[in-house]
Length: 111
Image (cartoon, rainbow, N blue to C red):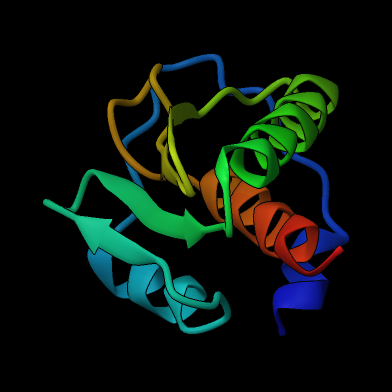
């Protein structure tokens, strides 16, 4: 199922729309690996790596994907881990694009 999300493209949000309903968010969350919905506001996942170099490489790949999708997460880099937080800033909450980007990050984790 995550592959179906990962094959989609993030849609630019112009604002003025409400965040996704929690029920729909939970349905899409079930298609992801290891992500959590925090405060009904954003997605979060901690990625683990054997060292700083691996974590940095992941951040660089995630940054390239984010830029190509036009959807920009919060990425916190430290030794051996990256915490990713994703939400749609213009609606101050979750949209389908957030789940699409999360699925694309999951694909990076195994590449």
